Length: 68
Image (tube, rainbow, N blue to C red; front, side, top):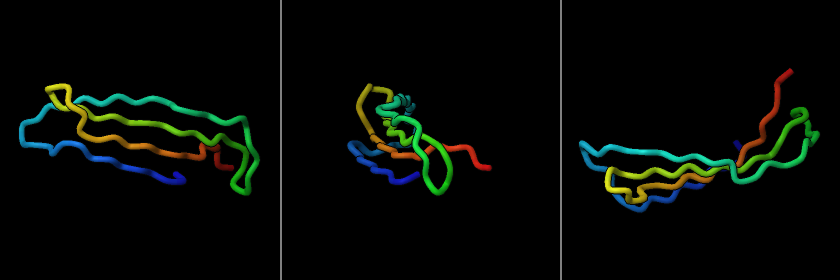
């Protein structure tokens, strides 16, 4: 993980039922780095309560590679 950004919009309460959505926002071409060959990706995770209200977003930037 290269960085993560969390934004909070509503408090969680005991008994809440939560639903999450995830999406891949971007993916680079294959890149070579000191860690190896891989892809820089950006993903978004959205968390909703039982009323469909947005509770939290998470934006994640990752470098995905296969370790040797």
